[in-house]
Image (cartoon, rainbow, N blue to C red; front, side, top):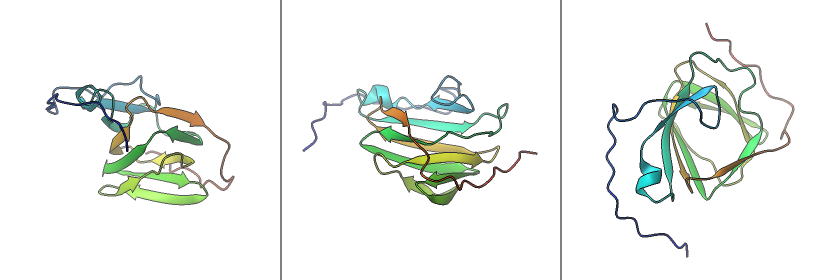
Length: 144
């Protein structure tokens, strides 16, 4: 059974409480902290991620995997195209993806209005670059 710290901190973050900022894992995305990592003592991170309108997709995230116990992505606006191993997957607003721990993937294309909620445990998960699962990645959709 998993051992977890006792969490007794209440958190309520309103839309105006935190801003989207750069400086996260990817410079072509902006991140909005929702206070969950602090509230859970680092057990879970929950943040909003959106396309940086000043940096359109060129090469995407590159092939990688996350060293984590749990990860879900809930697309709230727009769309993104992922490669999960050798399979292309279109994720649109309203879709929910459970990325099993360690799955090799690549977010290679997304809309200018893309925004998603990401929930990962633990909060300090690591990202590791990995060799491509396939060389058959479709071209990106140019922003207009």
